[in-house]
Image (cartoon, rainbow, N blue to C red; front, top):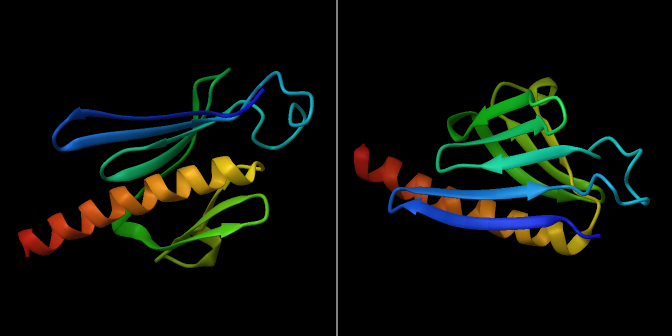
Amino acid sequence: MECIERSTTLHTSVRLALMVLPRCSHRYSDSPGADNVILLTSTRVLSFWSRKLRLEWDLPFSLIQGVTVEDTGIRFASKQGKEHDKFAFIPEKTAQSWFFNQVASVVRVYNARRRMDS
């Protein structure tokens, strides 16, 4: 079973990308992100647990210094320091690439909007 990858535009100014890691995959069922959902909105990225519906972390773009792809996922570097970095566990390379491209697209729009507002 593969990750669920969805991207949709709800309104011209709101775009969501959703990364749901498989719960029933035998390869990743005991891994750190087994029932984790990563939600990308037009202003922030959130991580929550689907079984408990509990927010793990919420990081607004205004606090993100950089985004990097690593061996097992994507790291969101925080402007507040390394101890505030957030990590999205995405073990499959194709899912990493898809989600990273979604993040890049949304961040470009976010930065353009910020420049226009300045």
